[in-house]
Length: 248
Image (cartoon, rainbow, N blue to C red; front, side, top):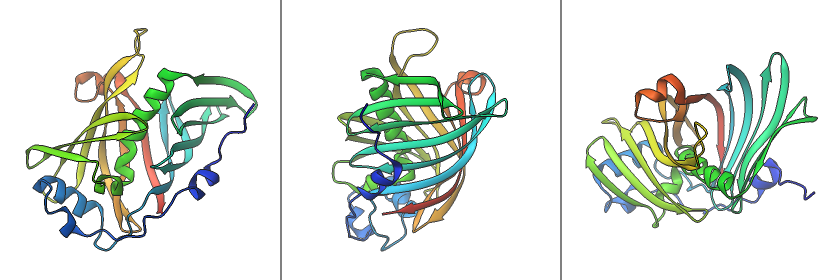
């Protein structure tokens, strides 16, 4: 079996863009998009290509169980989310990842006994959707020339971009300061025993903090059927608090 790429190796593979954020370069964007970017990225902050996150929270399987995790998002290559969750006091250790166009999930009880392993084209497409949604933790990606923006009013904006060969259609709501309130996109998944299809997926940002010049969500509620009553009753499955973030 091929040895999986580690968090450290993914982090070290990130290439610094070595240029600062300048709001004057965004003057052509819609006002709401400029407001979001200027809130999320402090002036002269280096444009990052990767972020490394430390987090904790709870994830819903049948019941809500606690987890602690570390994650690296390297925009050119993908992401690895490496976590330990505790079910009935026993640790389940593993990772979700999308690297260079290949997605996979691997989880083991006590780090030894497989409890979930998943690969294939559908898993990859769903993992790409996760990478697209978690771009909110790496706001520098929205500075790229390949990102297009549209707005319907001062608090709703839409970004469109391609990553890992899939086009993202990401909707934001922001407040008058540019602070991110919610995000939503169609993400590939198989729910309710149906065939794989796109389902509205998104999150509510309950708080934020600033790390290395980037202001990002630090308390999130995330799940399926976002924007409907089903989110609260059955779609929400992930609650996370980001404890630290570093950029390169």
